[in-house]
Image (cartoon, rainbow over all chains, first blue to last red; front, side, top):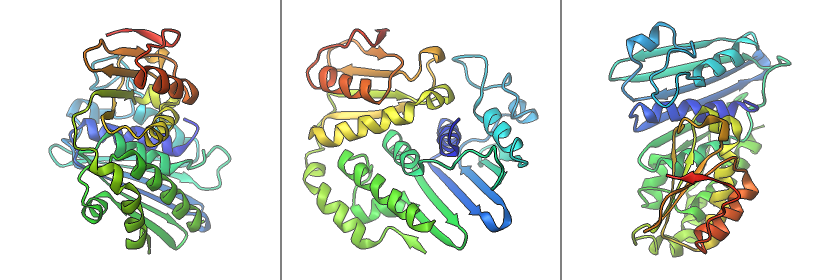
Length: 179
Length: 122
């Protein structure tokens, strides 16, 4: 994947497939510490024991449409080549937490990319799921919680295309201001 | 802490009030963007973004956009399925932003199936 935000989109979709109704996404950019951390946490039904034995093995997958599953394997490889690692915690019925770390200044680290597009794609395609997106750069942070947005706009789905368009612009601007 | 402020939200809400009030009716069109690992890696997010922009410009309130996982036809990703009411679903293959715009303008809005990009009927 060319951008880390695409990995995030992919892993978040895994959580939704696992029946989650709330996905928490955290990006912590700490150039001082030469560290980039991405955490994706869902409250879905967790990974089956068989998959958990070797979660990043592409040939062990719960999917049925084809025999390889690449999402976690690709993220693990991306972290690995930047002197980072992928950690997975999962509990049946409680959800899964994925944490990927990268050396911030590693030459092979892909850019974070267009997070605004990732978040609004998730919101648009999954109106029944809530998302909490936190992005920290150094000491500044940005938080978006779709539960608050739904309450404030009195709109239970947030899928209105015009709203999504403005939301994308607004997130993009907020992230730019962090840097 | 930087957050979307209440003012931002009020502004967004005012700008969307018109279209939201129209959105009560049933969906006549369903567009599925397939977003498995394969689709995402092949550019499904850019296709989705182009679709969302077209949708925002179209002033139509009866079009529903959903995402789904991989269909098992990874080599033809990004795939997009367009279902018009009372018509067979059409799967489009190897989509990109401009193809998506064309499919939206011609197939979704005018009902002309874009056979050049079609993978097949479901």
